[in-house]
Amino acid sequence: MNPADLKYTKEHEWIRVSGKRAIIGITDYAQKELGDVVFVDLPSPGQEVVKGDDFAVVESVKAVSDVYAPISGIIVEVNDNLQDSPELLNSDPYNDGWIAVIEMRDPSELAELMTNEEYEAFIKGA
Amino acid sequence: MSELKRTPLFAEHLALNAKMIPFGGWEMPVQYSAILQEHRSVREQAGLFDLSHMGEFFVSGPGAYDYLQRLLTNNLAKLLPGKAQYNLLCNEAGGVIDDLIVYCYDQERYLVVVNAANIGKDWEWFTKHLPSSGVTLTDRSAETALLAVQGPKSEEILRPLCSEDPAQLKFYSFVEGTVAGRPAMISATGYTGERGFELYIDAADAGYLWQELLQAGRESGLVPVGLGARDTLRLEMAYPLYGQELSEDITPWEAGLGWTVKLDKGDFIGKEALVAKKEAGLTRSLVGFKMIGRGVCRHGYEILNDDAAVIGSVTSGSFSPTLEENIGLGYVTLPYTEPGTRIWVKIREKLVEAQVVALPFVQPYTKRA
Image (cartoon, each protein chain N blue to C red):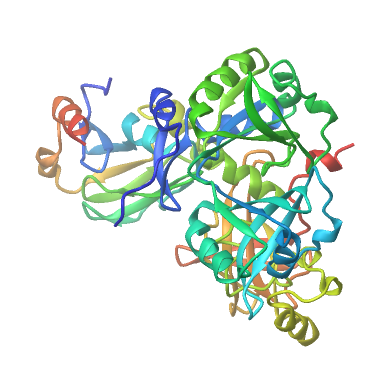
């Protein structure tokens, strides 16, 4: 169910790496737990984040949820489509529902993230 | 923490894969499919709600009328047999202990329906003020289940199942009869702003009737609806929710519920304080507002004026599925209560612009052309 080429966090973010760039989003499990997403508070490009920082907020009808940086670096791009279409997080969490791109400062941090199989096992135990 | 209570329909909710949450001491379904979809189903077709967590007190005997007239703010003299009345239970200081619905069978028999989270304190208040004779008070909350069918299709769904024609029931009227052969008190009331019915039934019949209703309503688009959409539906109507818009620290005048307080009906608990507060004048009032800037306001967020001074706080806030805008209710001090006034809501340390608007946000079915 979760794409095999991504890395995952215990806070239910995914990360897709290409070179120094890491695209970040929330997982299918996370969007189902949140329910209908009605607002995404996006960071500003240029903002520096340290792994574990809350850098975005996703709000569903009932819940407010922080999104944590899975990796340290600089935010170089955000998904502005989410301003008018926050529901993309529900309908397509792994593609059109991406949240931000971080230019990684230390790609060795990637080793601490979960593989697809590890994440599947993690949410089964959740 | 004490165990969460469960309604007789708990197994039905699990079978439907509902997401369960704690609410007022109960484990209740917040959604079955998705809140927005459930909300729209109620506005456009119909929804089925389990409200069995609500409390049901029966008041009977020759002293029933006088007893309730002294306990409640609205005038029971206006409540005829077969009718329901929205009412408030106030303390001596004029604060609201609970908001509730009173059903009149006759002058010696009433049903009082109270909020689930307040059953304990309401019961204490009701028993504390019980006269030594002439009134029998019975808590039938555990034996009573409550189902609501709400939405424009609710009449056509219920008609073939009911012993009485639901189309004949006016808003805030009720009748005793049967639904799918089981005894039911059928009431044209609700918390959604849509044409709809509430069915008071035996807890033992709840599972059977839940299934019968879902099956009978399938072709009309009836879906089960959880507390999530119940909250967005009532918010669009600006119906107060106890614990948010109402509390013992808030008077009916401030809450915009002055129409439920009948000072000319004779003495009742809280009257003196309510008269004094009315004469002193309002310092704050409940208002509705729409977010102009981007952001969802939530319960507890501060409300500020143009000078960034705090003038109140948000009691309820959400995305409105009907308006597709972010709306909220909150208490603000005068003079910031007029529609059109610019206010600011503090969302995660940022001030986001909002505007006071007239209520309700969405017109109820009784007011639509």
